[in-house]
Image (cartoon, rainbow, N blue to C red; front, side, top):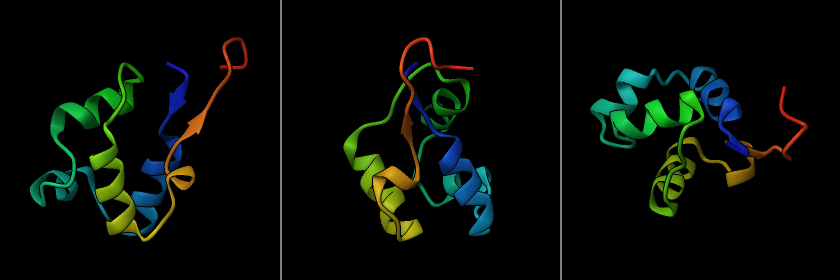
Length: 72
């Protein structure tokens, strides 16, 4: 997957949001969280919008594009 969400999980932790809290507040589904953590799928723009509203951030602060071959 060429989009990584490591920034999102760091920001969630910094802001005091656990993945449990995110699911309980219906911001992101369990399936979407699992896909983001495992790098097996993406999220739609509505989910990005909700995350940015909750975290008061821009999309670039929660995800990054990784070129093929640049992945670790």
